[in-house]
Image (cartoon, rainbow, N blue to C red; front, side, top):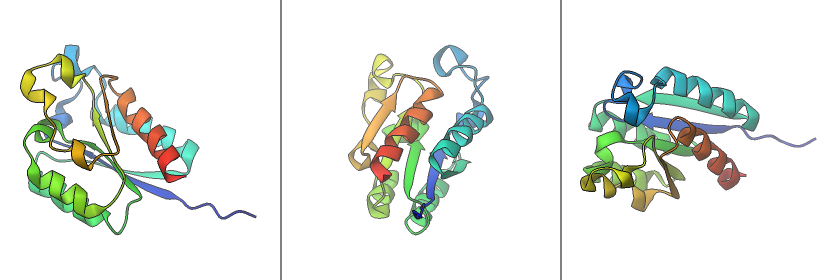
Length: 149
């Protein structure tokens, strides 16, 4: 009999992602954040993972959740939204957490404004997935499955 270790994946979403579905659907798609959560939770069942899915418009709250993850999560999927391009605090928290991190973006940030080409999150991430809409989250979960196995 093998021992199955359940993985706890913290999925964090930054500012304005609560507006998905109605906010610039030509860029971000028509799925809501609740739709993305449902898709990811369903996919996680294939991997014996538990998804802790959260969203905040507050940088400080995101930092606190990352700090708490150090003792409770196996990995982090992070769509930091606009904080990707501005937050050294999130980078510091991710580096302190010492967990595998996948940075996710719904749109291809490299086809957008130049300021979106810079990420303060990437130095703490194992990888970056962008441009695949809601599927970006599933691709991140697939990658974490490989990393954590």
